[in-house]
Structures are given as structure tokens and as C-alpha cells.
Length: 317
Ligand code: AKB
Image 1 (cartoon, rainbow, N blue to C red):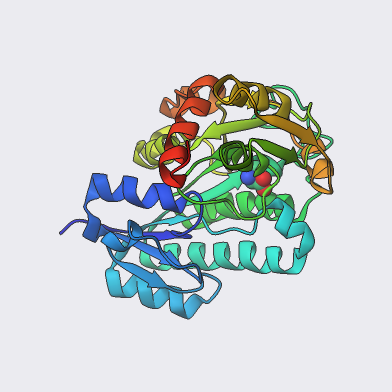
Image 2 (image 1 turned 90 degrees about the horizontal axis):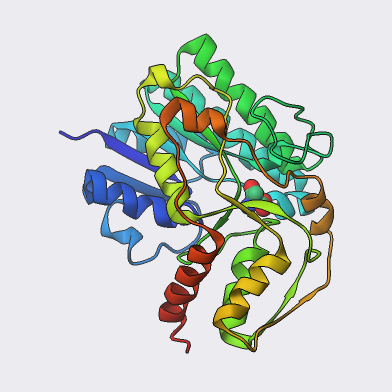
């Protein structure tokens, strides 16, 4: 019998792409999607799907027992902008769920993947080519939960031998599901608005360069790090991960190559301060060296594909 996988946060931005990718590899019936409230897509319902709250230990344990889960991908998280609007909720959801997953992984001998972020860095971190090991003094609650979570993961590995692996994702760009409440969300909204309205008002300054990645690269990295032999995973906090870095002005110019009438204006809001506290580019040489990470998508290729896929999805011209 194939070993069962649980994806927590299946209806979210990463889960909506990761669940189908895992099912294609391991079989629909072997990948259980778990969501808390949002209605799952038709695609997610092609295999087992359950509603539960990862912050509820008993509910999570019941699912782990029901399906005899051996691997958990824990993707559920309150993101940076939403976390600043409700820091209590961010702490409760992000830390409560991770603690439950790690405790249950220890008890049921499960392998774990957990999502960290460039939000683990802060204004005192070197902003260009940010090293793997550097100052971690984030100023958002989301970032605080990511640093705390990274240390908790490493603690469970060192103290209890839990095989937990993690990536510091940059801003992720995808077309299947909308992100919810992040600072890098502008780089997705710009595509929807360009196709539907031919104009977009960006909530960041035009020169706010941030590390970004197209979802197929993120999915590849996630599956690759989980498939690497344990001996190759030298970092048990979280690996830096990078693909491209660009500013709103640069992505707007790229969109304009495909939609010449597109206009982008800039009206920065509270999210600007968050963006200003994050790196511009990331040194991910440890991931490249340890388990062979390599990105594929450039800004040009990603923009072309996003516009094609979203046009199909929206039925737009
Ligand atoms: C956010 O903007 O909050 C996320 C992230 C970079 O972790 N996309």
C-alpha cells in the first residue's frame, strides 16, 4: 500500500498547485487535501478532501489516524499584510498549527514539510544577495512566526529526530488560486487587472524590488527537497530559495509588451513598509549545492505564461 500524504492548506495558493502535482506523482487516492473553510475546486475534489483546523490538535490527529498519514505538507499560514491587521490571529494560526504538526509528527513518525518565507528577514538583514545565515529580526508578526517556526522545526529535528524540511519562499506567482493577504500579491493582481481593465493601481512603489518565483518552480523545489536523501539536508531551520527579483515597474513593463495599452500607477499603502523591510535578492547557493535546486522561469517566460493561462481562465481576449 502506498504511503499517504496530507496537505494542510490545500485550498490555498500553494496547495492548489501542490495537491495536483503530488497526485500526478503518487496517485489521487494517496494525497489527502485538507482545508479549513474555503470551498475546494473541482480539481481538488478528484481525490480525498477533508475540512479541519490544523490548530485543533484532536481534529488533526483524527485525520492522521484515519488515513495513516506518513508525510505532511503544512502550507496553511496567515500572510504578512493580513498578519499586521490581526497579529493575534497570525500567531495563533501560524504557531499553533505548526506545534500540533510537529508534536503529531513526533508521535506518528511522519515526515514534514513546512513553509517559511523571505519575511523571516527584517530591516537589519543585508538586503542584496541575502545570505543563508544572517540577522533574523523581522518587524512583522508573520515574520516573527516564520523565525520562531524555523527554530521550532530545527528543535524537533535535533531533539526528537523529526525529519522536517522547509523553504523560505519568495513572493509566489500563480494563476490557479488567489493568494490571501500577502505583500507580494500585487505581482498576481497586476495580471488580472491588465487583462480585465488594462490598468492597475499598485500598492507598492514602482522601485520596490523583491525576490519572486513562478509557482511551477516553487512546486518543483518543494517536491525536490522532500525527495532528497536526509543526508543532503544540512539545514533544518529553512533553506533560502530564489529565482528572479523584480520591481513593480519592471513587471509592468513586461506586461505592457503583451498588452501595449496597459497602464500602471503607484499608490503605496501600509504594505510598502513591509516590502521595505524585506530583501531585494536572495543567495540560495546552499539549496543549489545541498539538494540540487535550480530554477527555470525568468520574468519574461513567467509573464507570457501567466497571461496565457489567465486569459484561458478568465475567457478574456
Ligand atoms: C507575503 O507577501 O506575505 C508572502 C510571502 C513573501 O511570504 N507572499
